[in-house]
Length: 349
Ligand code: OGA
Ligand code: NI
Image (cartoon, rainbow, N blue to C red; front, side, top):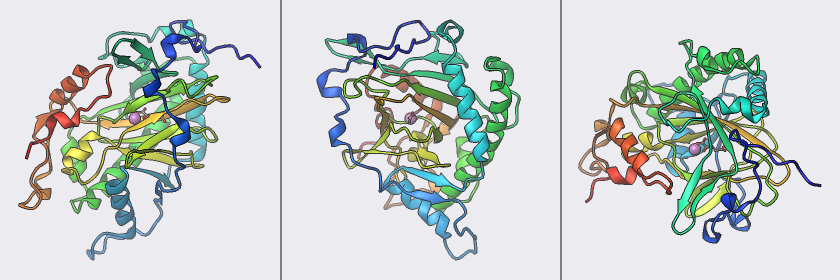
């Protein structure tokens, strides 16, 4: 069966032309990928009484997952199922709009708040290879009205996103506090250190079906930059993979769950105790896949460095202090490559 190729916002048809094909040594090697049984699934309704007798069972599970994987899924998280379905539906509709409608959000200016773009990598001797996906990025906020920035087509986009943002704001507060307690810190500590006026942005990633997933990548191997990410993925289509001990593991969608992953600033603030782990998305032969990531990031002026309470003689600081602006400058400097941003801030010992 011949499929009509998806048209990117710039009207390029997504076909297996050389522009989308990875050099052989960069391909996903799907036969080497392991199933995901081991990624923790954590029930947020688990016992969580702070009785002063050490961490609750819930906090212990979270902190083990953060140390070992930097990735986990959560269930019973309090965000209504219907709301998750509605937000995935409006975002899917957005990607199904005609390309000229999505094209109004194309820009080369990475400081633009609302944008459609395509991930790519640059390889020596080959040049740019574009990933098999399209991404729509814009702000979200649990309390401020940001919806005037959002599309009016599909018509429910603004309303649904505002409701989703409120619910995810509550969830972020809860997660930041659980992760803080997992570090043995005060529950407000991480949120305070990530600072005032955090950057709140979302990325919706659409991965059209690909005739040969072995030749392409939906999103290249990367680490997230901010503090933590809350990812919602459509049920029944796999694609997300994380690296553990040098092997790729799939993170299968679990019904009514969010995937939580720690991002670089949490690794630095925890002085390396909690991990920001490399991950990527592969494409799927038969079905398109959609994921929606919500990110919480320090603003440019925030000073990040290992939290002092976690430093002592046995645990000297592993990273130097920096402003988040410096971090982003390093990020942009590594454009087109597998970025190793936090490594640039490591202290040599
Ligand atoms: C991201 C991301 C993975 C996915 O948006 O940073 O890692 O499954 N997405 O789409
Ligand atoms: Ni990511």
